[in-house]
Image (cartoon, rainbow over all chains, first blue to last red; front, side, top):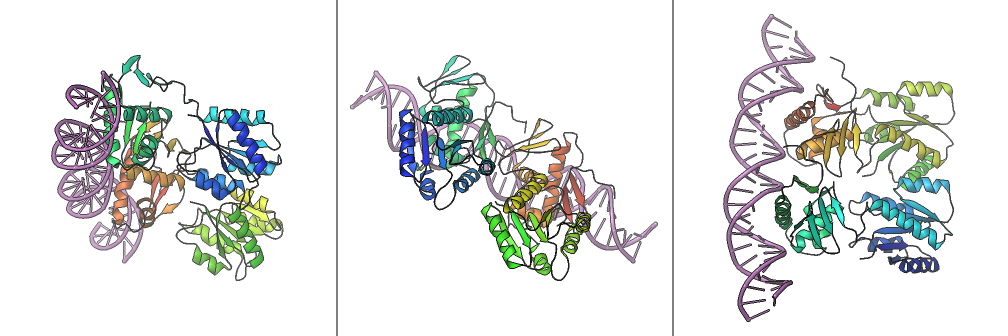
Length: 233
Length: 233
DNA sequence: AATAAATGTGACAGTTTTATGACAATATTC
DNA sequence: GAATATTGTCATAAAACTGTCACATTTATT
C-alpha cells in the first residue's frame, strides 16, 4: 500500500500541483484546504506524513503542528512545513513544535520528493515491502511468511498482523484499544480482552521456537514488543 | 497540559498584551493585578512560572518574590521579573530574592517568550513524551520503562506514576494531599498515609540499586524529590 | 527525660488485572 | 458441502497491586 500524504495548503493551484507531483511519485495524496479540514482528515487511517503550509487562514500551521504533536495518536506523524520565506524565526518556532523538516517555497518537485523520502526513511526505516528482521524473527510482508531463526512459523492472519504491527512498532507500550485500532482496524466492535487472547496465541507460537518473551505485559497499560529483557517481577 | 503562567502586572494594557502573547505561544495565562490577587491565585494548581512586575501598588514585586521563595510549596516556582529600568540595584535585589530572570520593559514578545522558555527548560527540562533523565534515573513514558544507571527497574503502576510525577516536579515539597491529587487523581478517597507506603515502596525500588535518598521527607509538610543531598536535620 | 506527634515498615486481605483453556460461531479450503 | 482453520467471548485460575493497620522509629515539645 502506498504512503498516504496529507497536503494542507489553502492555495488551490499549489495544492493541486503538489498532489500531482506526489501521485506521480507513487504517493497517495489527500488534500485539505484549512486547518479544520486537515483535522477532520487526520484520523484513521492516519496519513504517513503531513505537508503543512505555514500561512493558513484561521490560524498558522504551527498551531496544528503543536496540536498534533500533543496527541498520543498523531504525534508520531512526521510533518514537513511549507514556508514562503526562509525565515529564521519561523524555523525555530516550527522545530519547537516538532517539525521534521522544511521546504521553502518556491520549491522544485524534485526537492520536495527528496525531502519527503528522507523524512520517511528516517521515521520509518522499514518500508512496507521489505522483510523485517528483529532479533532472529523475520517477517516477509510480501510472501506473508514468518521465520524464526530461519525456521518457518505458522501464524493465523490476526497473529500475523499483530506480529507485523509489533515488529514495526517495538519498544513502545500499546493499549489494548490502540492495538485493536491498529491491527483489527477502527470501528471494529471487539472486546478489549480479545487482544489478550491473541497476544497469548502469538506468544505461544513464538515461544514454541524456544524464544524469550518479546511480548511484555505492562500492567495497567497494555503490551510492549521489545528485544530487551524485562526486569524480573 | 500547557504550562500555566501567572502574570502579575497592574497596568491592564501591558498585562493583556502579555497574556495574549503567552496564549499565542501555547501557554496558559492567568492574570493578577495586585500582590493580593497574585497571592490568592498562587495555590493549587500552582502556576509553572510567574511573570512579576517590579513596580506594583501595595508593595514591590520583590516582596512577593521573597515571600514565595520562603514558602516550602512555592519556593520552586520560577519567577521572571518585569522591570522598567535596567537598574543594577534592582537586579541585585531581585536575585537575592531568588529571581530566575529579568526582562526589561519595553520588551519584544519574542524576547519574553524566549526567556520564559529558557527558564522552563532549565527548571523542567522535560516534555510530555520525552524520556526523562535525572541523576542516573531514566524514565521513558513511551516504552513505560525505568532505568537506573542503565539497569532496568521494575515498578508497579502507582510507583511508576509517582516516580514520573516526582521526576517532572523535582526540588519541591508536595504534601500527601497534593501527591494524592496529582498521582492518584482528584476525588479519590484514600488515606493520606497511603502515600507513605507508596513512597516507601518507591524508595525501596530505587534504593535496591544502591542509590541515595532522592525522596526526602520534609517533616510536617510532605515529600520532596531532589538530586541534592538533604542536609541532616 | 518523658510525652506527644509524625513517619517508617512489614504484613495482609481484598480487589483488580492478566493468563489460559475451552467452545461455539464463522470463515476458508479443497 | 464437508473438513479444517480461525475468531471472539467466557469462565476460571493465577498474578500482581492496593490500601490499611498495627507497631517500630524518629523527631519535636515541655
